[in-house]
Amino acid sequence: MSSEAGTVLTMRAIGKSFPGVRALDGVSLTVAEGEVVALLGENGAGKSTLMNILAGVFKDYEGEIEVGGQVAHIHSPRDARRHGIAMIHQELNLVPELSIADNLFLGRERALLDRRGTEARTAELLRGLGLDLSPRTLVKQCKIAERQLIEVAKALSQNVRVLVMDEPTSALADAEVRRLYGVIRDLTGRGVAVIYISHRLEELEEIADRVVVLRDGRHIGERHRIDRDELIQMMVGRPLGEMFPRAAGGSTGEELLTVEGLSVPGEPGSGRTPLREVSLTVRAGEIVGVAGLMGAGRSELLESIFGVHRAAGGAMTLGGRPYRPKSPKAAIRRGVALVAEDRKAQSLVLGNTIGFNVGLPSLGRFLRLGVVAARRANAAVERQVRELRVKAPGIRFTVGNLSGGNQQKVVLAKWLLTAPSLILMDEPTRGIDVGAKAEIHALMSALAAEGKGVLVASSELPELLAMCDRVLVLCEGRVTAEFPRGRATQEAILEAAMARRQVTA
Image (cartoon, rainbow, N blue to C red; front, top):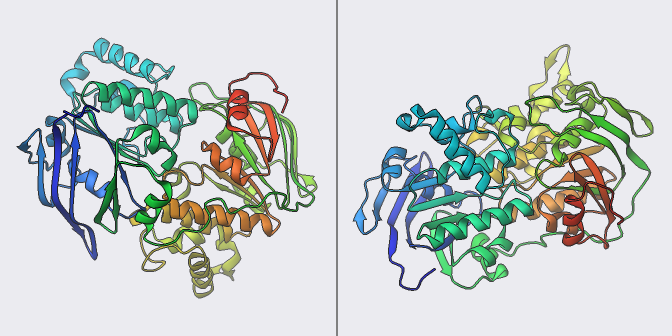
């Protein structure tokens, strides 16, 4: 960032209230041309609310916004676009039934009339982000990580002066993150101001010029120097437990899950990576990690073990008995649970209550003469919610109104109530704050200590290296390496993730 760069955005004394909640209380923020400002805070600190005001999602608010030194009346997304403000939302705002090109230019109907032009521009933007996708591909056929990069392309398709990126790397592996960094540097080099929201503190030293911290809807402070411990203390306002509370050399039991030569075909147009003769084991009391780049087959592997996809070859055993689930329901009956990658689309009924969501897969346990024993069920749900410290007024609170970290705790509570022996976790800490991450890591360690098996897929290599007893690496649906704890390194994992053949660990 140039030291002579002028201020492009000023948000002054911004306030916002929701029923019973003061979400923002007099928050101010400035950003200069070509500057990357990281906006930090726990889930519920007010980061997304502040940025949604800037993007025109919330039309009523207190305070004043200036863009380029002029007062900007932003009360709709159209107002924001007119002032050159674009936002990549954490919860992706794409229309699954439309093509990538149609999503990029949605709301700009004049541009959509030029089909050839929009598809050519879309192809150019996708290539710049390293995506080998046709502009005519339907978004519903794309993986979560691909959709996240499509959101980036959508923002870049506009004449942007201020770009807000809300958790842009949460579903991306290291290679895609590096590519995104290159895009950000190119934008800031052209004078675009970037506001960058992330829970991955390790990113800030590389990408941020300045860090602003919010807590409980208030501006706590800002720093030009990145000090991880200081920033965490500013964010949470309390001492934080160890981030990765798992000691090396924990005791493990008998083999709980064995997978031998598992092959699962892809479906044409589905965007699903086929699995090719995958073999692995998970012992009781063990945490096994699954690493790989976007499209490596991590989610497909966990979903296949959970009965979402039917195997074409290979064999599995669970607890010493043959295991071939025909559906997730059959997997749940055998004591398997899946914390899915996309909690909003795959794991939660957002319009319903915490109690409904947590109790849903366990209703059979509370049936009496065909009727649910509501008092007993509610007591079990409340106990589970209390143990996981879900921040909510009660179990009748709507899940869609919870922060991302608390939504993820509801997903975990739901599955723990089924008393599983094997827990599959797909990006379990995606898009949640450091406090919630530490709690989920502690829970993973506790589950392993209880003798349960944990198979976790994650894009965050530090998480896998710190928490896992072994790390399995996939590339294009094949296992290319397996590293025991202590011998795995980020470099070795990345090398194996880009290799199409077996790598010696």
